[in-house]
Every structure is written in structure tokens, then in C-alpha cells.
Length: 88
Image (tube, rainbow, N blue to C red; front, side):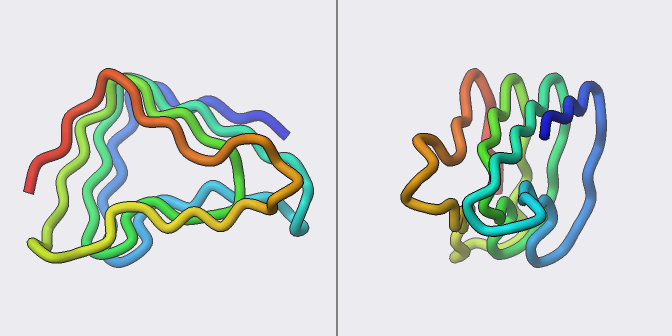
């Protein structure tokens, strides 16, 4: 239930990065560090727990929802973005 992405570049459109588990309520943990993620609307989605550390985000639309987490109420955490930059 754990995965680490280090020094990756994700280029996508809508829903560029999905952190999710196989079933609702199941724990899925993702750590993304020293990376770049570029997307349009709903750039980060999913029901998993994710930490984005030192990530450069590029949003390619001016009026979009950046995140759309859907984790279950039974899970304590959703998305954490720390020491990162967001550019449009």
C-alpha cells in the first residue's frame, strides 16, 4: 500500500495524477518528492493518502480545481502539499 515517486515528471490533461486504492476505505499511501506535475483541471485526484514534497505544479488552465480528493471518512488523511510551488 506504499509507493514513492522521486524525480519524476508527470504531464497530463484533466486528472493528471491519481492516488487511489483498490477499494473504498482501503489504505493507499503515495509520496512524491523532487518532481514536476503538469495538468489541467482536477490535477490531483483519488481516494488515497498522498504527500507532495518539493513538487513543482504547473496548471494549464486559469480557472480550475487543483485537487479533487475523495478519501473515505474512515481514513485520517488526504493530500498534503509541502515545500512546493504552483504556477499557472
